[in-house]
Image (cartoon, rainbow, N blue to C red; front, side, top):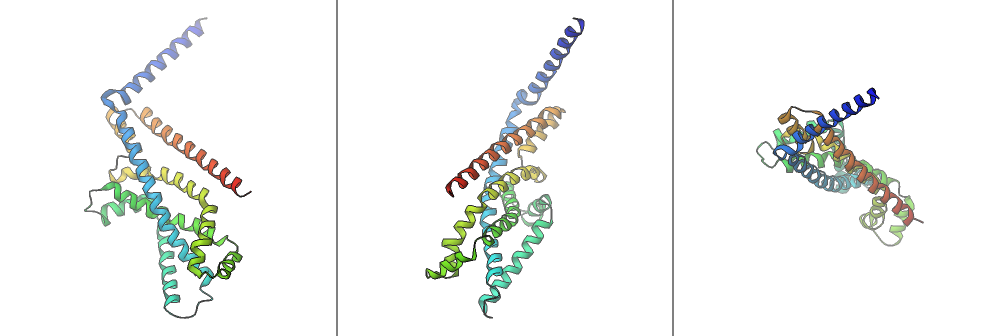
Amino acid sequence: MGWFTQLQANLAGWFADLKAEFVLNFIEEDRWRFLVTGLGNTLRITFFAVLLGIALGVVVAIVRASYDKTIQEMRPGPGRFLLKLGNFVCKIYLTVIRGTPVVVQLMIMYYIIFATSRNSLMVAVLAFGINSGAYVAEIFRSGIMSIDPGQFEAGRSLGFNYVQTMRYIIIPQAFKNVLPALANEFIVLLKETSVAGYVTIRDLTMGGDIIRSGTYSAFMPLIAVALIYLTLVIFFTWLVGKLERRLRSSER
């Protein structure tokens, strides 16, 4: 039984070391507060950035989809020129935002565009929201383009013009179709905000790094941060799955 006794001693020593690491990283000096504060900032940034991204993405998607569907039928004039100009601006926006890393966009916003601002959370919301808007725009545009063309004809038969048809018939259907994809964009954005520490924002990742720099122990704080992110992603993925099931049942 010598080996079993030795195994028990090794396990007891390992648990004692783990307990000491836990106390050092989270209990002493209330270091757990860094994670709680960071989690709050991460969720705030993600929530408001998603709202901004959806608002911006819907506008861009409507302009792009309207260009694709109507530009050939429009007569030369101010309306056609404005639509072409809007589509050109939207394509530049999509190309630039989707073609550059989000961390670089965040640093440009913080150190150049809003260099005099002290509200780093607001800057982060703008940076992540503008970035998310480019991806939401393509998600929503695909939803609009997937609507049967007969829906546009149905709107016109009811006496609606193009704008009214988009507002009352097309947009509600497209939004319902892409809602699960928008929810997944929220999950992706939640993880992307982990780079907010590059502009001195105490998000969840930065909170773990502050603990690590104070205790010189990397394992416990980084594992804790990873587990919190994993828990959040599992929870929101479950919500998305439940949402998709509800949408499917409502279509029957």
